[in-house]
Image (tube, rainbow, N blue to C red; front, side, top):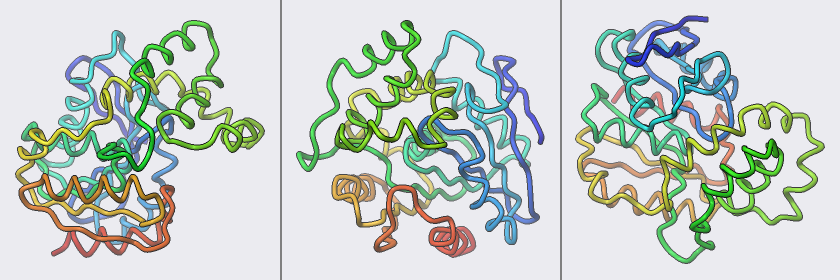
Length: 258
């Protein structure tokens, strides 16, 4: 376990493994770096992998009040630790952060994003306008489990009858501990619309990948690729949103070493 100190003094913890060009992995949702650990192990055969806990998650600090700009200062600190530039992979909401980091001009040399959750058409219901406000209220009331249910139904788009039984699954308690970060992510995503002008500012080669199993996310991938100045598209047929590390690792290696 390693750490860097971000601009505001927050400790950002990461695992470093492998040798070669630096790759930073950015996770999404109410998860910590353990979710990307299997992928990090696969990539470590070819790269020096920096798999970090975003602020408020896992072993990293959580200096309040939260501000979106701090997420990019954290990545900037990791890039400095990596030697001044890095390849970046962002999954789901982490892909949104990765795209914005590149748009802000951080020293990212190549970028891959997996199923960024922009809503670009009517292939799924819109996220309610009061989604973030409801998360804040539930957090204030200590109802972290209800925050997760709201996330899965209103943001992810899962049917409520599928979400309720998830409370009994082993991962639920660990996600409850990170439920406060759903407010952070909602602050970043806003109304989940595609930030076309911001994407046009991404000046690095970018690979946009989906799994072809979630239509609204596949539509978003097409829209993201169309908005980027230098994009490639790829579909890993049959992969769910929780993509298999063994399925996506070869795509990352191929693009990052091209």
